[in-house]
Image (cartoon, rainbow, N blue to C red; front, side, top):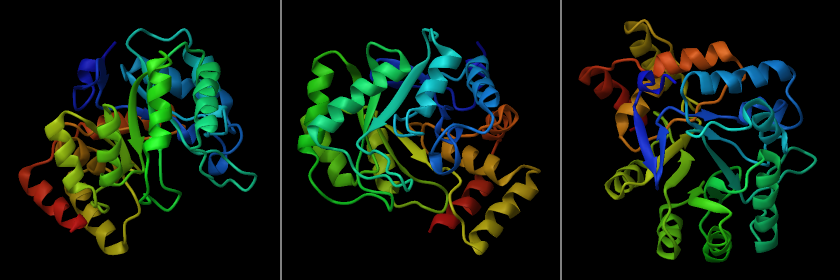
Length: 288
C-alpha cells in the first residue's frame, strides 16, 4: 500500500478511515452511464490500479449502468482488501432514455440496498448516500420518510454509515435530526460554490463533504483564469482544480472518475500540486 503518498492524507467517515483522494466509478459504464464499457478489460485494470495506488475510498451506485459498475468492482476487487471502503447511492433509478427518475419510496430504497449488497458481494454496505433532488440539482422537500427507511436498514445491520447527496442545507439538517450522517455529496467546484457555507459548517461538525463534478463547466472567462494559473504552474486545469479542492477544506474528499489507468495516475499526481497563497487568491475569484 502507498496511501501515505496520496495527496490530502486521510479522513474518518464515522469509524472508517479513508484516503481523501478517492475514486468515482461512474465513468466505467457506457455512454450516458448506460450499458457496459467499451473496454471491459481496461475498466477492470483501472479498478485494480485504484487499489494498487493505495486509494481506499471508491464511490459507486447500482444505477450506474445500471448494475454495471458494481459488477465490475466485484469482478476486479472481490474479495475486498480490509482497508477498502465502498460508498454507494440509492434514491434514483434509470429509464430507457437514460434519465434518472427518483426512487425514494420505502420499497424502492429497500430493494436498492439489497441489490447493492448482491452485486457488490457484501453482507453490509460501508456507506449509503440518499440521492435527493433531480438531474438539475437539489430540490426542496421533506426527507424524513426516505431517510428513515435507510435508518431502519442501518439498524438491521445492512448499512454501517449514512449520508445524503444532491441535498439542500435544510435537507442535510433534517436528516441529521433523524440520525447521524458522515458525509454530504453535492456538486461543488471552483466555479460552482453555492455550498461554501455548508462545507465550512460540516467541517466544524467533523462531517465529510464529497464534491462531484470537481472540474465542472467553466465559462470561457472562468476557464481562462483557471488556465492561466495552470500554465504558470506547468500543470493541467484538472490538477489545479483538484489541488484547490483538497486545500479548500480538510473535510473535502475527492472522487474524480476516469476509465483510464494512466489518467487516474495523472489525477493523483495532479492533486498533489502545491498551490501558493497567491494562486489560491486568484482561483478563489473564479467562484465569486
